[in-house]
Amino acid sequence: MTYTKPVISLPAVCQTPPEAQYTVIFLHGLGDSGQGWSFIASAARNYKLDHFNFIFPSAPDIPSSLNFGMVIPAWYDLKSLHNVRADEDVDSIEMSLEYVTLLVEEEVTRGVPMEHIIVGGFSQGCALSLLLAATLGERMGGFIGLSGYIPMLDTVKHINCTDPDLARANSTTPIFLAHGEKDNAIKFELSRENEACLRDWGFQDITYKQYKGLSHSTNDEEIDDVMKWLVRVSELELA
Image (cartoon, rainbow, N blue to C red; front, side, top):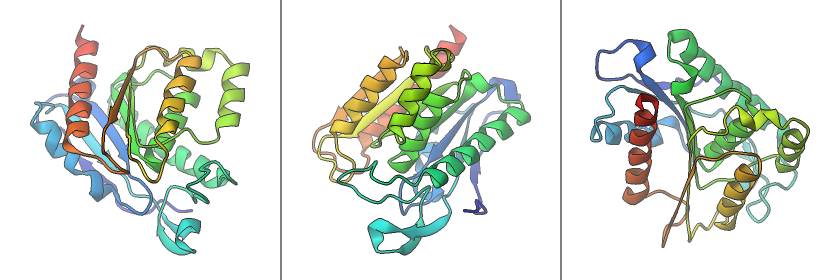
């Protein structure tokens, strides 16, 4: 897999030094692109989040088992919606996670503090974000997980059991989890599993939302909740 697609980068609109800024790296889902979620940067300006940078990377094009081998944008190959952890594409998951980590490191090099960097995503993007939260071992600004699940669950459980200090680094890092109750792709029940696992691993600051009638998508209410959460995250740093 090669990560050569252009990254959509929408910088903060107020003139502040990098150390006073926040960066949100948001990862799209299967078959989508960074452009597909760039609207949340515009939504953020309505909440006066003018000191936030937004980065929307796009996944490589790979053959998709769910689409009969058709080549589409994906962070990894997903074999089944009935069992999202069936025959997981571990190599691609790990490669995509390394790519996201590189994007985080680039922001740190630019001068944005690690504690001001938020990684989030939808569906496959959510999966990578929660995997990063559970395995990074360094304090970050926050994580957003929309309509997804924790991949490589047995591996992550083993890591957190054998290294209890791992989650401690992000134990007070805010996490926003949300899922539509009518999700026809990633089962709604997996959102409850996400929350339970993260709490078991020591994460304390979890905001959980569920939306009646929402399928595998987003809506205005969810985006509004994400924006309010981002406001809270930036205010926590000032407190």
